[in-house]
Length: 171
Image (cartoon, rainbow, N blue to C red; front, side, top):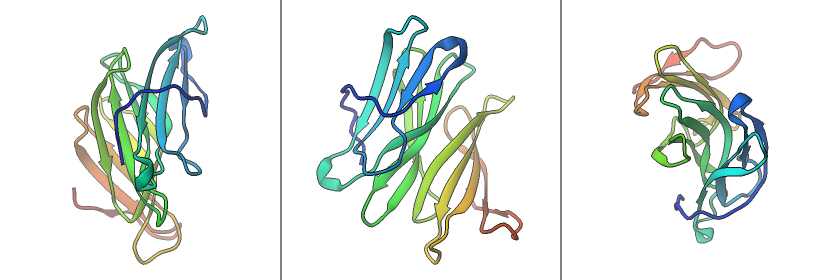
């Protein structure tokens, strides 16, 4: 569901500290695109990256969180996938300091997965919290996984409900 055509668009807003501000398209509703736009402290657009899906594929893309990376770039997290029936994956984009895409990957634990939060770790990795829906469940579960700087899964756990203990998933 991804294509790397760049166009303009604005749907959401995230403060980026001293680096300026970021406009993101959250993965809610029926959006065809996932946008990350960096706005400098003076209000000018520094760069923008938009991943737009083929409208014929009925895709739903979006970015929900972004963190700076140790190399001066950014890691953006959201979702990419079909809207009907819902079959999405967690979308992770590693961006350079100038917005160039270093890598782009999709991760899945269930039928319908979506990235919610990303946190940088002290060892140059990232922990991502995501929602997931297992095939036999209509309820959203929690999926937490750690990536290294290259985007490889280091570990992952799923929480089926509030009373369960985490179960380690095979990487």
